[in-house]
Image (cartoon, one colour):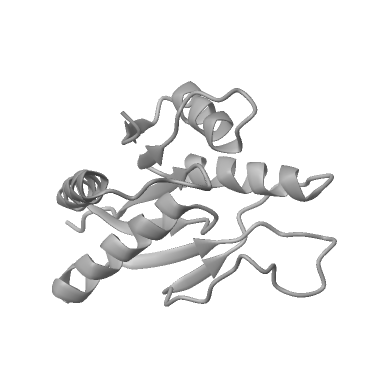
Length: 155
């Protein structure tokens, strides 16, 4: 019987102080997720924490290619842009997806993209503190509401 691939999303505030301790704790959580069957990692690419997770997942993919880990960049559709946004950094991904719902302006598109990523995920890695006006915190609250398996590495 084939096992079902699990999916993990990574979210955090835009600016994160990447310490050796945070790197070690994040690496441990990624290893745990992989041990639980995660093979698909979803990234939005808009925060330092996203970049850290991407780098650690890539490291694992390169050292253990038999795991067949897939990195998926989930972009938010922006009706108003005519070219890729300046924050987008081309990296190696196995897939690009646009999991969004209808929206009115650019911030809403990112929020709905995040909700779609949460809906698809079995495990979510966060680096988020309680900030009521933060998109990362609003995404965290949605994941809690949806009873998702959450690991918040902010603490």
